[in-house]
Length: 77
Image (cartoon, rainbow, N blue to C red; front, side, top):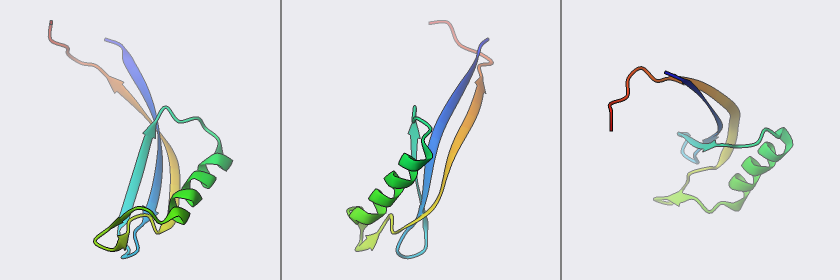
């Protein structure tokens, strides 16, 4: 069976009440200056609220996460 490598870009934020929120994107291009700008835009727009709490109030971290998935079994169709 073949291995499959999956690269995901994860942006981690703090909510206005101190909880953590994450946005994950697959197929993202690696460009640190655009990554930081994207996070700043999300925080700056202040458009994601739930129960009057800003869900993306502060930037925390950004990571590229690479996973290798090894298929062990696949049933015949």
